[in-house]
Length: 106
Image (cartoon, rainbow, N blue to C red; front, top):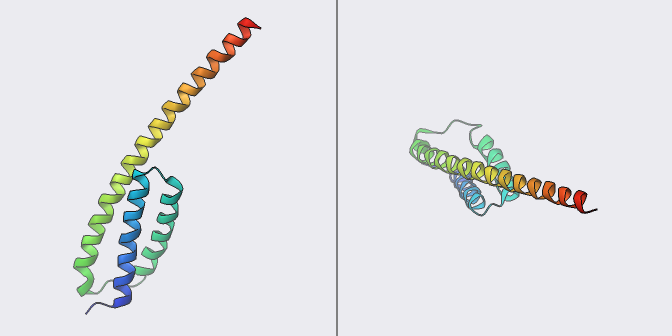
């Protein structure tokens, strides 16, 4: 028989994982970091005691789901990192062009 408190903890972990994924899709990086911190704490509490055999399937499915979500979050954050780098390069190029123009017209 599953312990209701552990079942609640595990559900909270999975819920935070989904919130993290949603935050990544919305590019809400501060929220994602906050959710990840909360999830990390819950994972530590949950795995402080070994899952009982009756929990093994629930935990296995949850770990699979979490790993897939984390992989997608990593992909989204890497894409955002590249996009930010490209924007910064464009900004630097515009700044250089503006500086050159001002130097030659002043």
